[in-house]
Image (cartoon, rainbow, N blue to C red; front, top):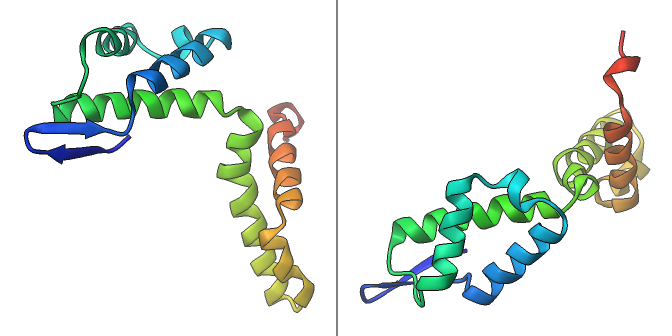
Length: 131
């Protein structure tokens, strides 16, 4: 969500409909109360009920942070691990293998299947098995 100043009104890219859909998805998955603090939940509820246009840059920024929290929580563990671990690790391993003289390793950096494999390995890597 980006606040765009138009006169004295900050137009937000997140409207009431998107906030309501996001809230409903979070409630259905049981994340609404786990991810958000009571203040964040109240802020979203009041914004949806009262505000037509977000005029405050501070409110727009706070709503943007809340939406980010919810979207991150809703994306799931595997997708989050893919973005944070799988893709960067695939690129790093590709670079190392290329330095060792493997020309075919260049394709590893862009291979989503390989990145998913690395992400799932990371998720399943239990601390119990580490010495």
